[in-house]
Image 1 (cartoon, helix red, strand yellow):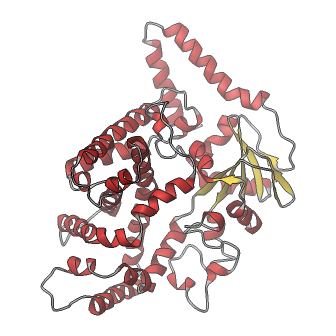
Image 2: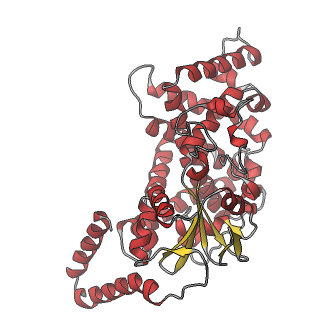
Length: 447
């Protein structure tokens, strides 16, 4: 167990000892902690399955899954000598699997549920129930995707594109033309603003003070998904308190803007107005906005940062991207215009951005292949699943390490190198196996 966990325990224990109810309260917490650690290991019923299960006290065994997930999965696949094994997370069973057959089953099976998998094992985005137990947010991913299609269709993207380019220009002017920058700060700030722009309203996305407050609460909540808060959700840790306060603050801030848009005499084409027009309640609108922010900021931000870093160290591909952008400007904008470049770029049709930037597309694909190597999560809700003649019981959580395919030398030549040409004609390494590229999802979960 990590030193930080011991420190959290000792700190909380010290606070209990100083209270007026120190002895009875500390005793109750101590007994509860002991039962939480030992009960699953001593009294849980072991399902009949041929899948090897990791032994030991579940809390200690599972801790690295939440703190060093890549190493945990890699080490235990090597230790068991199998492509599939199971371990306990308190009273839950989690089945880890790898290989082409497992990958196909993981992404194709109708029995494996995306939402349930992430809700417990990742902390997921904040939910309405965290603010008010009487509120309910739809669990169906199709509901979320339906609302997303209202905001992310081509017509709306074309309408919002000029404003997004204005945001980019304003941020870049603030960075200056020389010196150093931290992409993991500057780019994240930009991506956060653009995500909020697409998901809320201009009153919020154009107010830097309010935007910074919202972003601070977002990061507080994002960082509250610690091993302690996930494995011991009842434990009075700082992460638990941060999650509660940040969730309430986010809800309150967004509620103010939804109410403001409801009271407006003239609706706009902003996201909140469109969702109001769809008949959504304030609570559902807020829940959806939070879902968009949590789904978009980290993934888009980290891939944008790494794409810039990869290009800065690969002169050949940087020159190819610059040449492609220059061709775009020469072909689809008025080069004699006095308008600034970002205004001219904003006038380029969405179809051109999608269809006439193959170099940029492969750079993004390769960046995602190298960076997107966490563990995908699901929960088996409907029926038993057979993997390599072994049964994954109904109710189990299931995890698949994306690195099993994205960093697989049998699929990708020199897999740790940045080489976008691997997707081009004559190579097409991403087609060597079933679902060999997971950057946009796969099977029934493809984007």
